[in-house]
Length: 109
Length: 120
Image 1 (spheres, chains in turn purple, orange):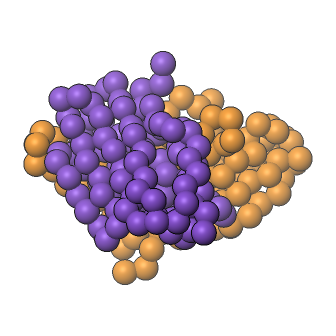
Image 2: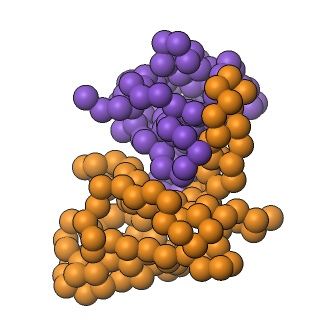
Image 3: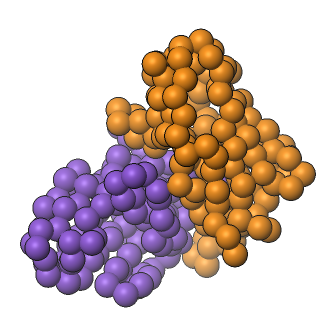
């Protein structure tokens, strides 16, 4: 079993839809990261959470430490949101992230 | 501040050769981590350097090595290249903060654009 599990693996949505991507982990963590990767490879850090909820524009990330679960929500989705979204966890102060397999999101106009 | 830079961006090598990739972190960041991304295995941690010392290492063979210089720039080297080493190699630089809920220290990581290595 992978230490970080994401669902769904693939997601197709219509423009304007509300999107949720889920992440569950089985290890103790110091922080959970949501990353975005566009075709071409570059990775952008969207959120880093150790508790509660964070919001940037149309993106919202939540984490439940007790349930070892996090969700990434995208409101009013847009075709430019099409990307792979990756959940990753850090186990301490050291820089080794453990990654989920990613969720490939495609938003159709 | 300038972001994380990686050179070269693309590289083609043949089996048996060796390769050196370079990563310049964000100014002031002392930690550099390296990751390998392949379609089959996804993203995997290679190693982390902090203040010129390897602080953590993933589960990769000894053909993969790295180092960090006094200006925090880092290089990784892969010797005796194999076809399976074809991948996107990403580095990330980081600072350390503390989580409000746990009090544990954590790293916010900033990724470079990657070096795409093709081994023929």
